[in-house]
Length: 319
View (cartoon, rainbow, N blue to C red):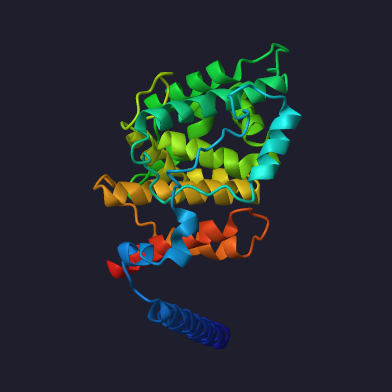
């Protein structure tokens, strides 16, 4: 009996040594690769990178160029869904993506504010042309429905950090959307995001520009979320168990684009001293950059990668 016990002890000891050695090997390899990657990164400031016109021209807003809403003609007349799609397809090759922190074009503040509000309203008119109906068979006014959802979400934002020290926060985040919205609301948002995959990138960029108007423009329609609310939702998607689990149930395109714009929002909070939860986005930037580089279907892939690189260098310099 004692011989069997001794043999069992020796077997466990050997297994422990093997597992420990293998774990150390994996750690040393990963640490070496990480150190090499960090050493190879040229640490420069965002301002220095912005001084390189070849790399950043796609990141800057063009103040002299009159932007057109994807769902309107030059005169602002509403068009059919098919016409809108053709207009966007014709522009997607030369339209510039938003800068990391889009602002008001010099000398065009009032005009720009008005135009961005028109873009959003026209976009929801375009959604209504598809005759979306709710589960009860009633036609939905997309604009009013979306306003109500945004107001509800802005009143009850999630907690974007602290799950490690509070299981209550983690549980609340895991069940956040199922408690904050009902099934109809979630279905509406899903339909809205996936309504036109061909123009999704432009539509998301348009909404991002509108969201970033913040206090620079009057909220004439009374439903633009506060930046504090946007910051908390961006942190929720990036930094919480519930937010990340929700994102991984979405398509790769939606997940990566939502991650990208969430990073831009947290970055703006950082630069303006508003990152109240101290969310560290550098690890998320690196992961997003690697994934987007392997996903060539994005129309604006180069611009996304350039913006991510600029943010990565910004944070690497401050390490």
